[in-house]
Image 1 (cartoon, rainbow, N blue to C red):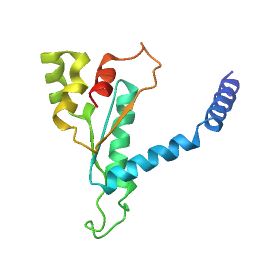
Image 2 (cartoon, one colour):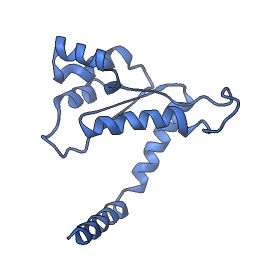
Image 3 (spheres, rainbow, N blue to C red):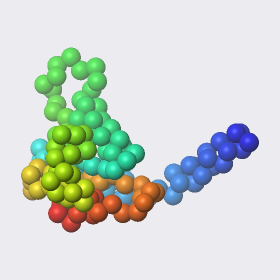
Image 4 (cartoon, one colour):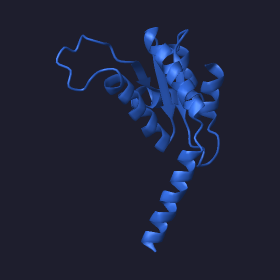
Length: 141
């Protein structure tokens, strides 16, 4: 049973990868590159497992996308300016406590978002449905 499950999983994953729109990936790369060139921020967020993905993506942008991990001269090229909104539990829970879960990310963005910044919301939409907090963040952005 285990081998059958793994084989099926791999086959489904292969089909998904084949159907990923390469033009959309290229578009996102260009948006991120322009954000970096302009010295603007990439702001990420997500809920549940997507929060972990948003956090990891922000970390990769800041550390590994532009900077060579083995770089001796740290001042050669600046990495991306990034922040993941779900990485600060003190501010996150303060917004939740005072304004409710639905307003948490919009509250963050109201303070941090500037002209030219890029907002990346990670959501697999596999759980309970669209979370109002990410919808409100999209509307504010």
